[in-house]
Amino acid sequence: MKKNILLRNGYLSAVYLFFYLPLIVLIVLSFNNAHLSFNWHGFTWQWYQALWQDTQLHLALWHSLSVSLLAASAATFIGSVGAIALYRYRVKGRQLIYGLVFILIILPDLVMGISLLLLFTIFKLPLGFVSLLLAHITFCLPFVVVLVYSRLSGFNEHLLEAAKDLGANDYITFHRIIVPLLKPAILAAWFLSFSLSIDDLVISFFVSGPTYQILPIYIYSQLRVGPTPEINALCTLIILVTFLLVVVAQYFLRKRA
Image 1 (spheres, one colour):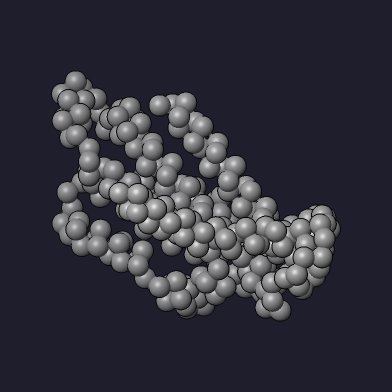
Image 2 (spheres, one colour):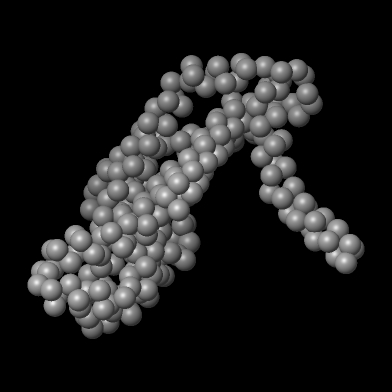
């Protein structure tokens, strides 16, 4: 019995170590007083100070946040309305439409990026903010539709029938019943869309153009010469922000429960 417990604990420890050791190394090296060395040369804050003075980084971060916030909001709205319409109205070929949407989720980013680039070229759309925003909305939409539609599939349709029997029209049914029940799925879809958008590199690389740089492309361009302490510091800040968001989300979830 003790042997099984030791094996289980050892296995779990190895898995956690595999996941978190690279993050720990990255965080430690972000405080290392050496530019391109994995040997410890003392503690320093200079790489974090360098981030505040990097105007190119600030611009890339602003571009990323602008595109991601708009893309997540637009994709969540359009995808939620589309999922509700697909569920409520028994159109022919509904399963085919859902299948085509699902295919977009598993489609390689490389194929999506090239196809969108060709589309923008055909319509002579300049590569920049607009092309990047349209591309991010496009690849976020399928995830929103699948999430919201999955939530709708578990609906108790008797609620909608009861509302109709009580005289509720389509607007009241949508506003008072469907939206409150869908709120967790809609919020999850928004956060997922934002995460996918702000983290995307492959598709953005094809459609962003030379004059509009976002954070993932900025980091990629800096890493061409190898990892640098500034990038380590930037990634450490991203890890910290992510951790704080998770803590805040867990706090509100427990408070609500």
